[in-house]
Length: 288
Image 1 (tube, rainbow, N blue to C red):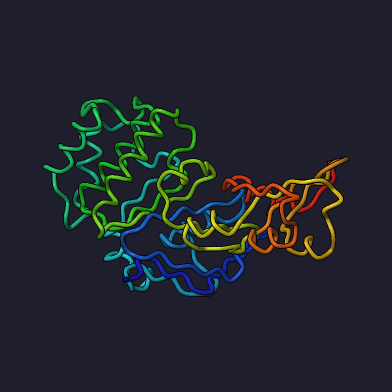
Image 2 (tube, rainbow, N blue to C red):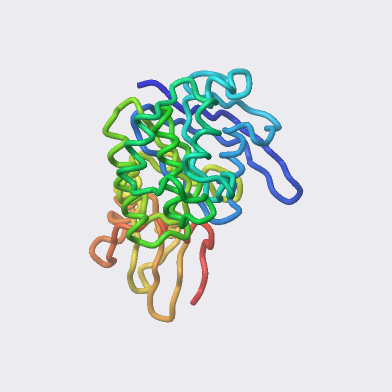
């Protein structure tokens, strides 16, 4: 396998926030979900990858190339879909396409027109007249029209209704059938990633908590529930966070097999959602 994104020991400090030496890798042909609470560092990481802000230290390689030294070549191969509209609002779909297309070596009007038809996008409507879902589809049509190999998406489904979100996820699932294409998908809507992601990278407070196959997460993590008398120091050390109530507890573990051996049949261990995992890492232990 060949790496599409390689991040090594990346650092960036602002007043009151820092990216702390983060590292992860996305291999070609896969979808990686990039999750974390608001303010965790997701957008900062993406801006660093796209060289929209300058790193303090570390290494960023895209397609094996330094993202700054080979910026023009790298960006020709990236389709960027951002949460906020970055097109000229007063231009029509066709006029905006005419502005964008000269920047890409592999631009195809035939491909663009194909996706405009498939996405039911009105060519003569101004960008400002498009719904948020249509703007997202336009951004994806642009990315597809210059044969992008890597799609970097920053909160693309935020604020969209469930039907449009489902359509966009279907488009991504279709894209990834081409094993030469990869997707790096930042979102706080983790249910979207349950459907399409192969890998999950979780960032919290500027640090990477884990970056691994989604199936490994679902296999190793467990949501443990049981009576309070089961809790002791031996099992507590395997909990990432715990909610203790008057008569029972609920806790998150990243070693469900070990906790099962300790607690036996006295506790219920369910598979957690990605939301559950984020919540326990963010909040830790608490009494309710």
